[in-house]
Length: 279
Image 1 (cartoon, rainbow, N blue to C red):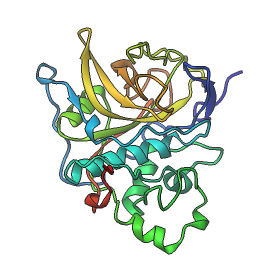
Image 2 (image 1 turned 45 degrees about the horizontal axis):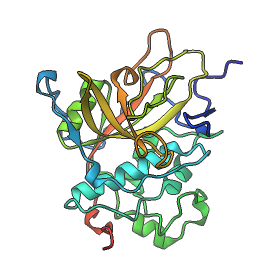
Image 3 (image 1 turned 90 degrees about the horizontal axis):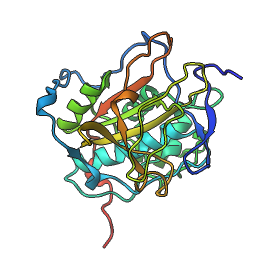
Image 4 (image 1 turned 120 degrees about the vertical axis):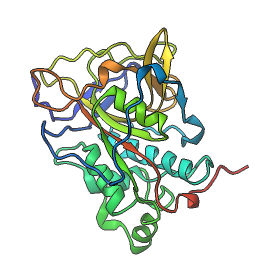
């Protein structure tokens, strides 16, 4: 049975756990989203690439369960890390709320566009999960206190990423990269967390999924994106994986939908107010 390309799909992950792949994709030619006017990130030539790892600023691994909330979870975790990086490098514990992002941005039938999540962060900000819970998506229940606190955490810069080279360059320039891609049926990390090359069927059965990239690494003479997922610590390499370049194509020949909905992000307002780990 063939489904529409933008329909969220339930599929077992590498551990046999049903996952709702809920990241949707805009049609080719959809408007780009730029939150900052300071100019594009310069491309770094490949012979100047180096390993990048921002794991010191990541929040704890999140788990969306079987919900379609990958866009909310990836946005919350990525922007929590961006806030920590902008606020002096203190590792956060009070993660921003996935429920808030998903509640405001969910598409009919489930799923989310990364660009819409970024617009939410720009316009409304996002409160921590101590104020709005991970799975609290009912925006009608959000009180004035939550709305006021959310304004402390607003997106300040985002640039659209259209290639693996652009993503690597953004990472080397101090950005994180939030993205949605089609996973295909080869998305199963090995014992090291390395994912094989993408195998996309282009028939609507490959679900879209949102994650974020916090580094690049050279493995076996190839470059990989270092990616944090939202499927819990038991998945991949402690909740993360290494994804090859083949996943990060802007468009796929013969396919009318973007495969890549990706943006480099950097910094939030009042980032220093995210609590550090208690000792």
